[in-house]
Length: 510
Image 1 (cartoon, rainbow, N blue to C red):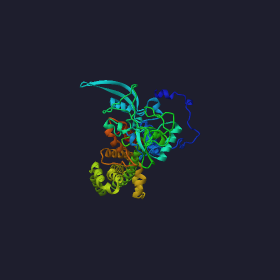
Image 2: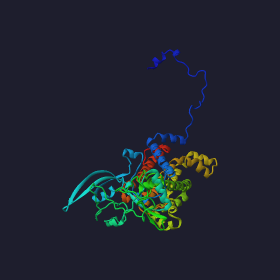
Image 3: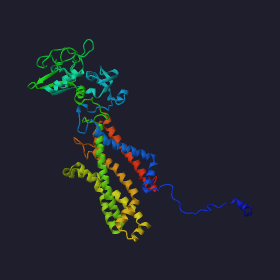
Image 4: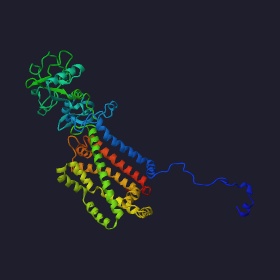
């Protein structure tokens, strides 16, 4: 529009804005956002970091809650259930986590052995014959219950314990005690001490069947020497007792002066009788017969405690050391940096090994490991703090504070440190997974062992499970899953904190 055209506009079309009102500053409609609130706002918008934080929180709750509410503890073990598979009573109804495991290529002797144990074989996929060197052998592919395959066990009970067990059988109708096997009828030398072999067999262990294809028992003959007082009763071919007479025939062998009894019991039922619930381990059992679930939670708790302790100590030491370096600079910084360089050049693996060899004998494994982490672990925090102090100590507000007479301590903690804290906190948080990972590596390599009767660690569980990776992968799977989730989530969580506290570093590595 040209100037002459503008001059032709009617002035009445123009109105004054705020003609009768005074202009002045207005109050903000919203509350001011502080530094940490703004950081939280940015962090909450990073969905990956939020999810990672939730997973870390869940892992932490898992480590705290499970040992408290679990039926077992780290000290519990039952070697009869070694390598038992993961089992859930609820999920087993749908064929998931039912405690079973597939076995392929069982020979006839092994098949007969497990088939004689009640409930051991849950499914036979196929049987096939293989001819080798003119000899034909039968093999089986089966699915086996890792809890039921424990079978029978020889137990020594007092007279009072035995009488209570018999009363339990009568009350519930569940048979726990079975007839004793006659050792003189054992044909295979490999079965001399195996109480699961109650059937007639040849020298190679292959079962001999009757005309109906059933097992033939080799139980002891009932006499007054191996029964308690009571009426005799008939015993079925598989060792179960019929509903006639008393629960006394072929039940136990009297030892010593008649106050101690040796019995042959179906261990799964005896376990239920002793504990009040059937054997069922959600994460399975390791080689020592320990519950992997409670061991993992207790090990994670120990790892978290160690990691948090190391991180707090290193954070404080690094913060103080780096603040002095960065604030005063000059000769003080030069001398302190030379000390850092000397400590930094010490290989952590060598240092931790030497501490475990010599220092652990006096103070213990855990304090020695803690000292190994603290000796050089603060260096990274100190370096980051030093850098931040060099960045901020030349700012105008620091000069203004110094001009107004503020002391060095006030300038450090009230003016410089709050601005540098975001980046430093991010580094401190990432110390936690680093400590847990280092402990796991040291335990996996056998340099450190935190395994005792009452304690364990994630790294120790990984070390114990490596020998059974191909046969029983569940022993190492759950500790490996835990450490993997922890490392991935802490990395994502740390990146989210970095972006939240220092947006200028968003997208950078490290």
